[in-house]
Figure 1 (cartoon, rainbow, N blue to C red):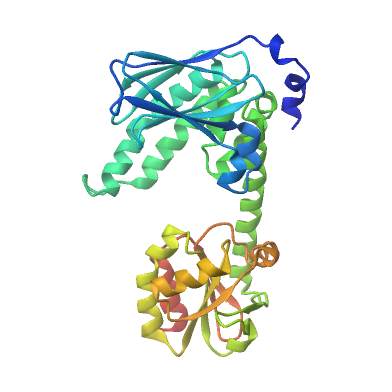
Figure 2: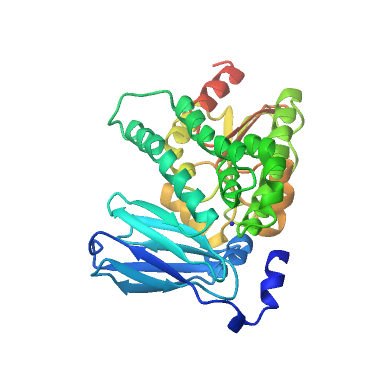
Length: 365
């Protein structure tokens, strides 16, 4: 979440001016402390697990209005300063930079950042999208009447695209583009590219650019497979008892291939409706749960904990790239409808109620 570090790596630490993060607040923090977490940007970009981040954490007493934290001299870092577990400030530093964090309210958190063009731009963007995020949260909680969430999303997107249009060479334009959906990211990538290569965010930007390209390609592949009703890619994977299960074993049935993991909150939220549909349409319909991105032990425990009554197979790390790529899977859950002739009729990413309407129509129910 490379070359940018090579120049600073050649400069002796003693040659880099010492710098601080200054945190100002109107009073003591809610718990009288603040927690400072940091990890290098390179680690955030390349980590495959939380352990790979090499995250360091310090708890600092905060009973007065100002505290300072040293800025690392050995590279670019991402900081997270938390005050009560729920309210935090995130920003980035480079050696020699002085950053000022002005807290105006603790819960919910309100703040401004100063000291560098990057954090000042981040602060401007944070405060611009805050009312939009609050409105969306109120609607999601049922505290306000349902509004047009698509319109809210468009307003949210416009904050970032307007910033890029206005200041494409700003380091914060790189932060802005990283908050856009894949299609809009691609549209603005050329504008931001010159600033990106000089930004502390460059390793993260590079990784996101790769993910965006993969997402767009996966979307293209999904649409092509659905429109052309291509033959579902074959697979043979072990079930809960270690017995090989093949896609071809289910020819003649309607199938839902459910790419999931017990770590996936949205996968779990969708199980009640999937169970109801399975009960309603079996034996004409079978569900094959394809577990991804976890150990066999956690997979088996997840099946048992959620009492999932359908067929389950395990997709090992070694086979994930090939099979997920074959089905265009970029997020979880992803559900694929396969007809009795073994052809793909629908692919849905995320938990979408319309999936079951589509299934019923395809099955003639």
